[in-house]
Image (tube, rainbow, N blue to C red; front, side):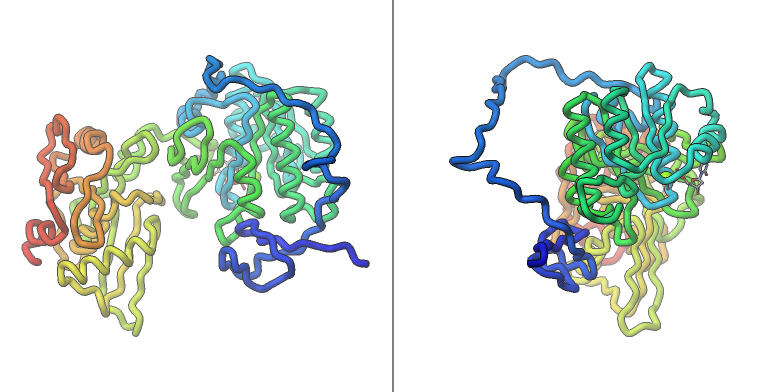
Length: 454
Ligand code: TYD
Ligand code: MG
């Protein structure tokens, strides 16, 4: 009898009895692949199973010190990690090929090495000479980082067991190959097995492990869910091609706040930290123009100002275009619907383009009002008053909801030379930070007040 095979969706990790063109769990097409089953063996759990070892129990109240952290000195990276690298933690760094993951991690490795940690950098993709060349370009050729170019997981683990480094970087998880699994490198089964073995090594030996994962075109790391749930931290390295800005975003962090971002700039000599991202994102902004609105946002623990740009133009198409970069498309549809239904401002027959300047991605609902303001400003061809920052969430009824950290938003705007802000009514302004704040109860009021319509 043929060995039974299971089928797994590479996008969501759901398992299926047989192959199908579409995964009914997540709806993705062409993502289901066949996988060799895990070896069953004798029953390992349940009554009558072989007896296990009794595990030690500790009190929840025990006063264990917080985990010690190693600081790289790359402030943007340390903050995204939650204040530094935690021993025995497993970190997944995902991103598009060519975005700069290897560059970032080589720079981080050199910093940690100079801070006294022992580091092994395992490259499964590039030859030693290539990595050395990059290190030279980054001015890090003399950093005490040890290098291995290997893809056999068994050999790597044997080496790590003997060397016991403080930090190991695996570049990338998709190139690793475990001989315990009977499928090709890069397949879900291999990625899962390799990640599992490396993460257990981290926990067993106290070594911090960084796994680099390439993201596929659909925006997911091969076998994404299976690796994401195994690791302590999931960081994504993002950026627009053609822009030099790169954003390291924590989407999961067991040792710090999620949604934290670190901002970098790709230069000829590697990645530079950007310590004042607001200034950077607003740097290309000229005179106040129709369709341009400054949003006072919060990313993780830090306020960040970004420019939201909109363009509205008559459409030649039956179904007008809705093109968004950096904002959620569904959110845009909602805002357009609220503008039409509650304020009587239709966008039918109009192409709508919305973009966040500088390649930034904004996911906060607090950006709603800034997006609406940019759309209205573009549609009415009238610029918002200069030096005004905007924030607030729009509900389906057209009411404006106050958002968190109002004071921090105002403070950051003040710091960058803004003097007034538009915010929802009942926002907790605190000291007001020396800003003139116009508080609006709803979108209709906002439209009437700012654009004299409604
Ligand atoms: P890389 O770190 O190899 O990307 P990844 O590991 O995510 O695939 O970075 C590749 C790009 O970065 C490449 O297009 C060249 C560019 N780059 C610079 O602009 N400056 C530099 O100093 C380095 C090392 C790379
Ligand atoms: Mg690389």
